[in-house]
Length: 382
Image (tube, helix red, strand yellow):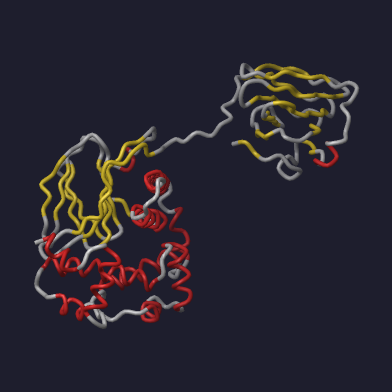
């Protein structure tokens, strides 16, 4: 990776002339101008202190103490390289020139192919086909399918059986599976379980997800936060929604890949202390989920996870970009959808069961969240 050139980063290789001093410094009498192209780059060893200054296009200076391990700097300032340092010069695009001055000219010791100077993405989501928040009835059954694109399933509430290639995986809240392209899969829930989960099918522009296939994934909080951001972004009305959702999905997949390469790296804090940020949030979410039909408050949730209400609020805002109170409200409204689908209670009874002050308060919040009234939603699912 190309580093910023300053006295600290360049320490050990030479010195960087202060920018204010560069402006009025005339070129040394023994200076020569070297033309750089995108072909091979010459490798030199400094035989005395050597001054370099790039003119024209963007230049990169590669330096090494042993001729093997190089560090790369954007050459936007005048530098003085120490004696015996190995160096080469490259150009980003087109052509550039470098002014070189030394009491003893540097020794050319060979050539090297121009290094790849630009950072390119290893993995990028190129498109999304489906992005659904699924709210299923108790004991639902999806008979199965296969398609040419990978598909991610993340369980937000409850549990879900995920069957792929004849193996039955039971996914609990906070767990996920990634189906490979053309992999047949089906899903179902146990009797009495009404799961809520996210499914995303997509295309990649480069990248290898094979390490994520055919395994139950424990999704770290960082990835959960990205997924929740995607759901909120999707509700916006602006021309950049699709790009933002795809960028967030790319980040989510990268987090999952890093987790498989270093499964303990993101859990060190939770291992060291029971009150890590992720653990506090997980416990709070679990308590809210299992007590959603009770009267809940931020103070009560904070007591359950043994932190102050203000600290719990800070953690939710930092990691989930939502307050604990708003999170409770959203989960209650999601639960109300399930209760409406079950068709065992009327709206007044649902409002009372979820601890709303009045059925009118419940109906107003339902429409604010979902854009339709409880009555309209009931008609759509019956």
